[in-house]
Length: 257
Image (cartoon, rainbow, N blue to C red; front, side, top):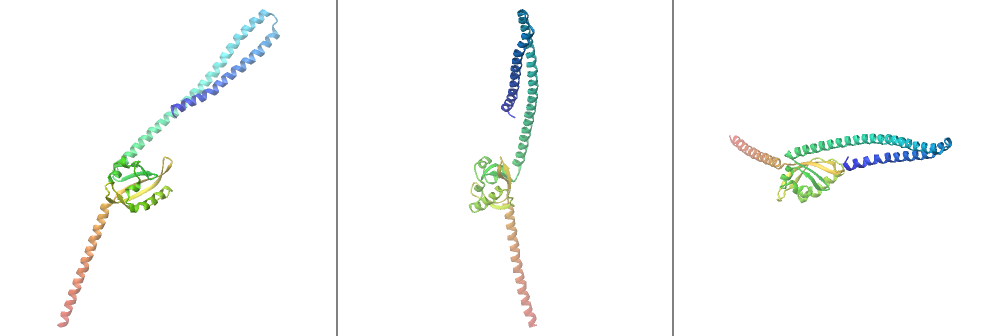
């Protein structure tokens, strides 16, 4: 609860109390004037005694209304104090919750910033958060990506429609499997990347949080392994052909003997 809302709440509590006090005073005063004068007129005939009693009646009215005002104001103040204490307690609890949330967000961002994998949050085809690793993989600074570029800007043109379809599915709340794409750096170079995204709600609207990993070395190693296997298979095929040829030649010599 903000200071303005707290002040408004206190004013709202004061208004009914003020109305009750004014109404009680008006009713008591009117009833006192009407009925006390009639009663004195019926009981006292002597003008001097009537004047004295009317004066005493006035002082009695002042005393009674003072007591009534004190009771009404005191009750209203006590109620107001309880409301004030509850409001302050709520405000203190809210401040503690906000501090805990800020500390949690700081810790969360610290963990994501320290990650070696690229981490991102995007909404409406704009990045709202990227960690340093994500920016570095593409040759940008975090500020150049956040709120500036679209995830499609980091993909080769041939794959942008396909990636946009994946983003649209996550926007509808559908989960997608990790997929491989050709990522585009700021300098125009590319690298193989594995991307995993998950639909979330950010600021009350659909968004995506995900990770991106550079798998260029893994793909290079796989290619080198395939090349090595192919070379071995070729060498094996050549060796088998040579052995088969040599075996056929020996067979001919044996027939001659």
